Image (cartoon, rainbow, N blue to C red; front, side, top):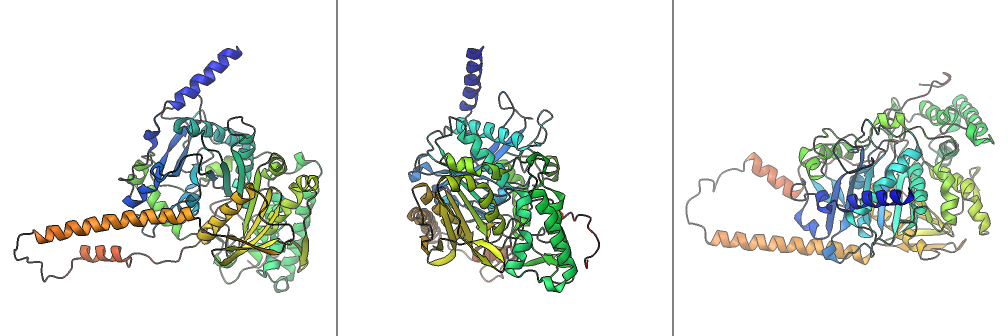
Length: 575
């Protein structure tokens, strides 16, 4: 019986290994806005890989992916660059946010029909972005595989995807896998990293976890809202003493939930803790019909959106991913309007009590995985004080076992980490760094919930710091010095290749144009003195970059709902 099982596994594995990788090639000639010279350094694959049993077939539930790998003609091999597996949050929000608005090499222009080159993590790693759980983005469900309900379900589907993805593209020569994400991926990423570490095929490859503004323990991190708004001065408690008093009572209720010793009795996301942020937004408004932007407190938003109307780039990205030509190039034709987030996925996803991503941090650290947490300092909803609270509670076994200490200093009555070093990227202050063994924590200045959207260049340094941590200590405890990062030499090589190819194309076009002009028939043109047509003017604006929208781009993430659902609270506020 055991032999039969082994043979069946081998047979199924061979089925996936026999699928032609070329069937997932992105048709760059058909992809709107893709510039020919980018293909000299970038190769892409996309499509849906089934997560059901048996062979690949239409109608199966599956996970959509879009990967970006350095072109093999550029000297890249799987062993020379790490593979970053990126997941966005929600639950139910597409990882195309990460691909086209954060760390990917391409960004959608304001027009929604063009692409721009972005200095993203592609400079230092190959990238694969996965829409999950099933039902998210371009990932289909089926009758036999409806929406996932738990982290056990979603992790099992991710593991099937990883095995089949590696089978199809023959990727076992990758020596390093970095599991990364942000926001609600604070649940997905640790569970996926744990499953990969426990799998003999991937165990030696998974060396790094990278999490930005991660939602690791919802109830614990909810206790950081009041301290954060006081620390940043976003809220003046004296402006509405009654509301602030009620906020403190909600804080006590949430703390009582945290004090429960029986973890099975603690709801995954307790209403008592959710109410803190809801009440804060209802009570403290920067102006009439305005409210705090929960993703970037340096800005506000209309009430009750409070950040969910962001970003201005999202409509352009939605337009682009909804284009029939784009979907055909990505092998997901017929999906119609692309949706950033799927509320049905969100409503169906109900993780079990106590099964927090945070609970896996210590075991990952002890198994040699380098855990890197970074926080944009302008984010409220998953703020840096909440990240520090998670480190204090969940990394404690690892820290104690290795005789590490956390130095803190009070500020405005709030106990905060003493950072070990200033972080400087490309000659400019980018934030601060703290490291204990395999655990690294980075504070990112002037960044919101989606760090790479705001500081794309500096975010490359975060990946660099994580890679350095794999090779030893980045900074000594309490050193009080500076750590510097910059774009790699390889990054400049990528830009240089693109520039060289672009120049060659331009030169060839000019030479050909001169040849055509010199050999043209000498005849009178009625257009010689005519005014430019509307089409000609549009073409000029497009080439000059003067046409289209010039709206400022902002950042946004949806963790809970598309529209803010405010809890029913006692009416002692001024709404």
